[in-house]
Amino acid sequence: MTLALPQREGKPRKRGLTTMIDFGPDEMGWSGGANGIRDLLDCAADYIDHAKIYALNGLLLPEAAVKASAKLYRDYDCHPFAGGMLFEYAWAKGELDGLEALLRRVELMGFEISENYITLGDDERKALIERFQKSGFEIVYEFGRKAPSEPMKLDELGAVIHSVAECGIDHVIVEQSEIDMLAEAVPTAMAELREQNWFDRIVIEADPYRFPEQHAGLIREFGADVNLCNIASGQVLRLEGLRRGIGRAVGYSIMDGLI
Image 1 (cartoon, one colour):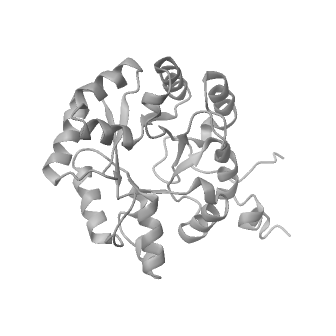
Image 2 (cartoon, one colour):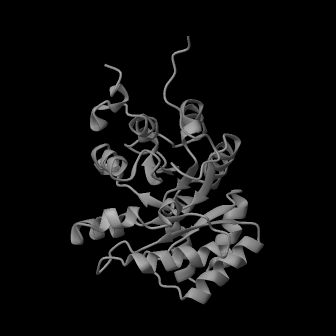
């Protein structure tokens, strides 16, 4: 007999995605260079679908370090991309050509288009996505504001999901602040969100500072195959355990029915 854990779908996954956020040298898990990232990936690469380079780290870190990190993620089949704040900063400064040049230098051929602070019209959003896709970039889209003024509307989110799908984008990240405000303002909202026919196409941003309680709550609410983003490098392995019923936060549900 062989002792084994309950299995999840392997990569490439369409459900149960884990997008790790690479903060660089950080209290939430060292991913500050090739050695740290390689050690992480040797243990947990099977559980990381995408790796997001945090905020403006593409500019803060030495380019050689970003380039080495991006290569390692690709080598281990963990698709890397730059976070949306780098795009928004470049857009606000009128430096999209500079963004493209930077990402080509560090061989990071994916980035997130977001509207945390800027606002794009539907046509402009599509035009930007198509422009960079034609230039060879993999585009990730994030919905929502860092400081929303009112709860998001599910039909608006659904419309954006269908719109970017026309550009070949299968999943949309939903900003953490939007989820938090919606859950607080509308008690039934999470149940309604789960029932949307596009639910499996969103990736919910979790708060690394509320790990593991919030993450376990999202698993209880949406199931073990909920798509989650902004998982710190030091949380990836434990999150995979939570998905499989391992840990106090999920009551060691892996034991249910065994005793």
